[in-house]
Length: 156
Ligand code: NI
Image 1 (cartoon, protein in one colour):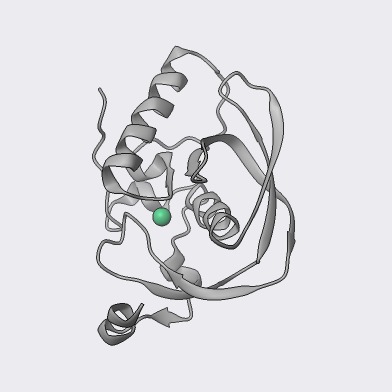
Image 2 (image 1 turned 180 degrees about the horizontal axis):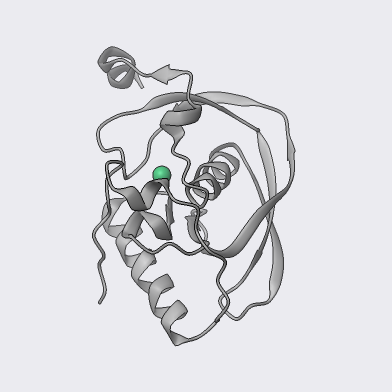
């Protein structure tokens, strides 16, 4: 299938709680590959399966070094705080001011079902929190302080 259509925040799929992945099969691998292709095409940092209409607990994050595949992820630990601009491929053209932990550690399964731990700071920690929220139907617009103005967006 390749590139998938990224749904916007009016779509019901973005507001649902996603189900755990139970089968680590070729279908999951294809989904992950399609998600990576779709993320790269959109120049994003992270993508969650519900954003392409798949209500399963699957997230990918581009760390700059690799594309992390996070299946059935949960946050193990957070530390500190950061406040900054955050956007979402499902909320095109807008950015919000969102407080997130500065550091986050996540536990997830890889594409073969093996558990592992990933951690990150700054943008990566922000992305972990943002993408995992998607799996529970939560968009940053529900946790932000406010939208950034056009002027604030232009000055960034
Ligand atoms: Ni998003």
